[in-house]
Amino acid sequence: MVTPHSLRLVVIAPDLSASDAADEAGLALIERSRQLRIGLLENGYNIVAVLPVDTFLRERLAQLQPDMIIVDAESEARDALEHVVMATRDERRPIVLFTNDDDTRHVRDAVAAGVCAYIVAGLEPTRIRPILDVAMARFEHEQGLRRELADARSELNDRKVIDRAKGMLMQRQGLSEQAAYEKLRKAAMDKGLRLAEVAQRMLDVADLLG
Image 1: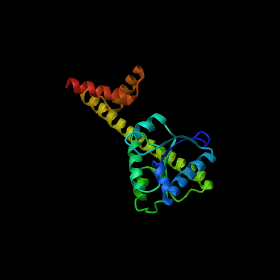
Image 2: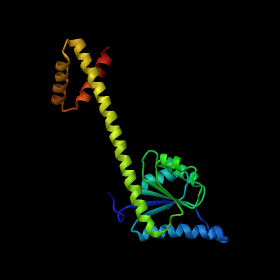
Image 3: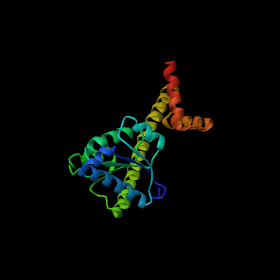
Image 4: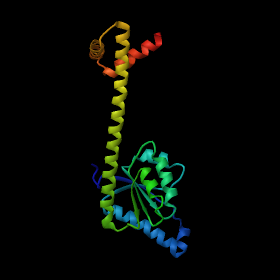
């Protein structure tokens, strides 16, 4: 597992311009965002970039290759999450959202979309590391389940291909099921290929020749 000292974070935050400091609410937003970044740094995390939500987010994340994405959403948390989830759709990464938006009606959808932690008003420095540790552990667990599911599907497809190739040999060469399997296995060993690869090549040639 990646340690906090080597964990590379990208913070997705609103662009708080100087005009936001003109009123008390704007000042509070700026201070809250600053405290979040200070808390991350004090806990030993490496912030490699602070990015706005814009049309270039996907390309910037692909270039930076962060280990985790922190979403600092002052308001409109759902809109920010939708952009981040879309930007990481092809290359999933753990996402943690910190927000003051107490409208949690869309939390279920956010978690289903890949958000590992959804933290409302949780900026105490002592809470940051446990939150990120749990988020990373949850992400790694889910990725493991995804790999297991992909492996199971691949194995099932391999079995179907091998069974089709065995059936073809049995029909065309009058072989028993065991003899057809042994013929496929010997061809795989001779060519240094997986059994399913040999079976698929055999089926492809048979389709080509009719």
